Image 1 (cartoon, rainbow over the protein chains, first blue to last red):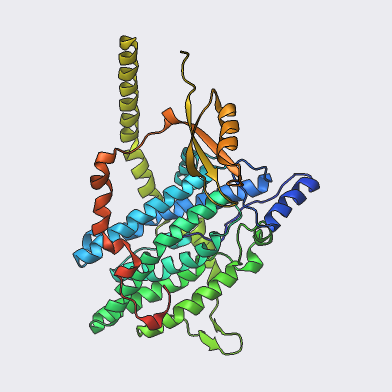
Image 2 (cartoon, each protein chain N blue to C red):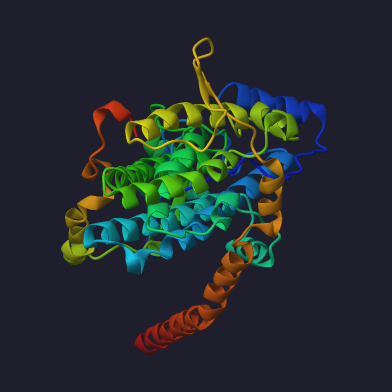
Length: 331
Length: 94
């Protein structure tokens, strides 16, 4: 579902200049870097971290939506929500697999998530209080994710780019089902419309924060752009998202909760108010309303699943032993 | 007759940035020979920029007779497709 501007990655490298220049020449020629290629340690480390954060976000992102499966208002909505959450799980798996090509193991990444060492998108640390939140998440959160992920389809690292192509193809339904929910509520009774507006009010600013810190505050932005890990700055992507989304809200009669929002004829952009970066950093660093609950839920899932993983391995070993015995007997 | 040379499945990356795709198979005594053979058999006309070989014995395939039960159910899950949701044209691409 989501990738945030990279939070706190250290992209320093010690390789000699000739090596780095050769690598940069490959990047500049739009060659994809593949797992077996020589690459600067900083490039590898940045990608492990970014793809890992992205994967964790997909998995943790299943939780706020899972909260509403049993209370979806119709079978149609319930089937769609289940399918969407199943997709998010799949997206997490594509991404973990892409990260594993860089030499990090799945268990290491899981361990980092559960210990709180690895970050994930701040957006999933907000609660889903009403059914309208499911609409707002699909429309805004998945909309922001798509804005982020489309340029990642051209990321210089091959396995990540290919995983993103697959993810983007599946993501469109997520945003449309969310917008459809919002549209239906907005056209409903005054109470239903109020529900939609309230969800928009709560999700708008956190959605803008999904693009990560402002370029001026993002330390490693330049290097990541140079390596073509990212193609646009956080602020550019955020502006594109605002431009695309404001008319969508107006179309269904909802109002963005930003008194400073206004169309600028000259630039062709919507100007918007100041983001509360204190809130952003607080939530990223664990102080959001749902941080503890999200990690606790993941930890419980991991621990409760331990016996299943062990049993599956024991069963596989038993079958292998049986096959070995049969082939010995046949000789 | 001596033991037959093992079989290897050959995967080729056609161009920069694309995933490896199954091209066919070769017989070879070991992985190095398999790569050589795959190069000679499958990439004589610029078909690729990278080769993978995998022992055929290491591959597991789905059972063809279970095709319907494996893949048929997705046909009824039309809500997994973007076109299932009606979005007014004025809203633009989504």
